Picture (cartoon, rainbow over the protein chains, first blue to last red):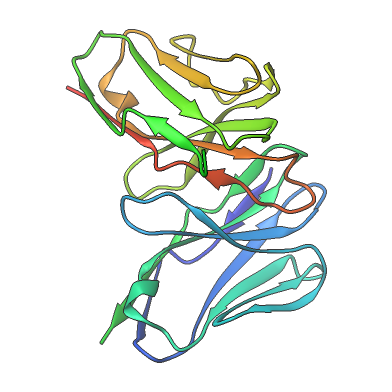
Length: 109
Length: 116
């Protein structure tokens, strides 16, 4: 089957760095996406890694290792507004994304 | 419009009633998706449209669920004879093309359905 595993909850301190891991098991692999969703809001796209390595976009970075079927989202200089759920997802086909269950990020002052 | 628009944002209905949820995708986006999200859970795929065709309806939970898309634009998700387990947020998303190349979908704010 196809599945993604990510921690259900992560806690960090404002101003710190936090890493949210995602391991996947899929037949055929195109890339790994990350989405952010605030409570009551819509998921919003953060990044997509098709190749191994680190992609940086401002305070957020995303990493992929295809050989390890593993990726992570790195958030630096945490702000209270970063409190949200973060989902990893992989395309199963040209139209369907398989989603992880989401990681709730709790940020303490 | 500038983004994906969904209506109604909230719907409370009685068990056994039919409901219609509407999605207006981003102009020019040929692909449209419906997902369901229960409280604190991940996203459950329901159906995908490419243009007006739905090549994959495998995610629809039962035959009480149906969806259509007209003019390659607006889509309607219909739930007949609603049950309490249908209570969830129904999310619509669109994309210019498929997900393989960019993994990016644009989501609406969702329609929160509560079945009493």
